Amino acid sequence: MLAIVCQSDAENTAEAVLQLMASATEQLGDAAPRAGLLFASPAFDHAMLLDACHTRWPGLALIGGTTDGEFSSVGGLHQDSAVLVLLAGEGFDAHVGAGIGLADDLAGAVATATADLPADASVWFTVCAPSADAAAVVRELERQRDRRRGGDASAAWPIVGGLSGDHAEFAQMREFCGPAANRDSVAVLALTGDVRVGVGIGAGWFPLGRSFCVTAASGPVVTGIADRPAIDVFHEHWGSVPTAESLAAYPFAVYPDGLDGPYYLRAVLGADRDTGALRFAGGVPEGALIRMTEVLPEGVLAGTAAAVRDAAEAFDGVAPKLALIVSCAARRWVLGTGAASEYECIGRALRSAGVEPAIAGYYAYGEMAPALPPAADPVTPAGGVSNCVHRTSTFHNESLVALLIGQ
Image (cartoon, rainbow, N blue to C red; front, side, top):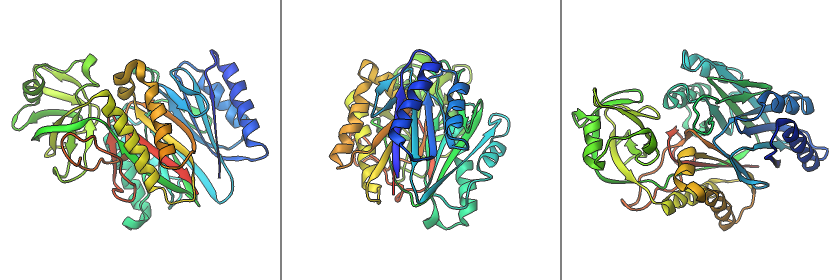
């Protein structure tokens, strides 16, 4: 397998196309790519970018989306660039699908996106619009995957990916599949054949204090915690009511199967003072246990390193060729002017694990991966998790997902 990464931070799309195509041609040589990923600033002309890819490589199995920032091993971290990833070689294949209309018919959109995907895969990489409950999207992807594998748990493959982004405008998100730049959609890339993967998930926010039961909830809206208005429990702990400016600061740790089981983070997006409800960036199941969390900047990077380390430990091939990273936009916001330190941390963690694949990734409005394992103690940031340990994926906030791909 040959994995190449190209990046352009050109000020206009036409120049970016020239730079990406020249870099790809030089790196590929005579090789023909089988799979592609495109992560791009919302400022670009996405139709022009996609048309260039499909004119150069007709029928290329490509997905991607707009982002809240992009990074790669060839260009580092940028907020307004385009990153193109191409996989070439023998022994594997790639298949893509897209479904439009998530907000109106979530199940139908996911069914359409996965309808023509093969019955086996090494991984499904997914880019999804934040126009529907992403937790429900992941559950529906899992249902479609499980239908194909006939209930054989050993044959399950991980579902990994993230939401599209747009620099906190929440209006310009696009999801790419083939030559199309869609809205309100889900796109899936399935890799089949001789493909080995390793998955890691890390956060850096760590649970603390007592747990509470979610006693009234519907999708992403929680009205009751411990038989009290949800807003009261938040206010009692933090002394304030969440606002748009604080949404990255106070995620909850959600334990759907009890405190001994895996968990995920849910960011608070807002509060309704009249009803006492909290609105989260993804579904929170009634009956789940929740705990408050806390983070320090070094904790964010500890989660980054743990995710990459565990992905490397989970990888069972000869050597990974690509490190595909999806990090939450909230992590970049928390790190502020030090956001480049996360990309640097990814490189250090890979080298410490004894591997040096090409790196490509983006900042998303949420992440898809297996759940976080319970923290070893209340002040240790949660680490990564192998796809071989927890095969059931879920939707995360404020986390980083590392996917290593090779043969």
